[in-house]
Length: 197
Ligand SMILES: C[S@@+](CC[C@H](N)C(=O)[O-])C[C@H]1O[C@@H](n2cnc3c(N)ncnc32)[C@H](O)[C@@H]1O
Image: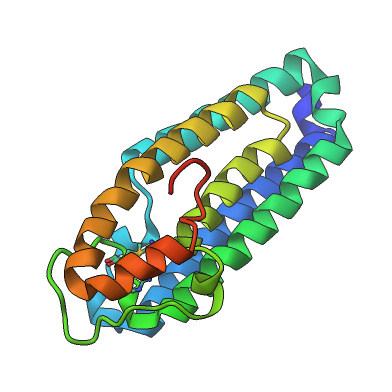
């Protein structure tokens, strides 16, 4: 267990905790700033039971591997690449939230509200679902940074599947709200999630 208290263990675990704390705190602050304090609850922190379980399992993988195979965690170019993924994913997601403003609601809207405008500018000009691309890169990046092979693959598969199911559902309503304008936008711009058109 002493491996955990080496420079490698403390650096990677500290980076992981800072990444998680920064991600959720900034989500919460942004949501309050955009939608107003009364409309934002703690569930806006996006911490679900499944998410907490996955993060916990990934920490257990890390602790097991750093104890049994400490050299696995010393691949610094992999770990630093993961750190870059965390930063890029974070920037992409937060840029998407700020760009979409009030149109960005944590829950998918199934009824059109007056303030809901179709956003196709900024990062939405590059991909249709930048906050999902950002979260995919951020979450897999946390595991690459920890040099966690099992969780890196598991996070990629589970998060990808989650968005691959969610995007058609979300877009069904976006097509109802914005009609031809959304259909043309979807033909022009990729979803931003691999293998999801
Ligand atoms: C959690 S946000 C995610 C937005 C988008 N999928 C993304 O990844 O950036 C979900 C809400 O955003 C709305 N939304 C998604 N794309 C939009 C767009 N291009 N313009 C306006 N609203 C959008 C949906 O109607 C839904 O209620």
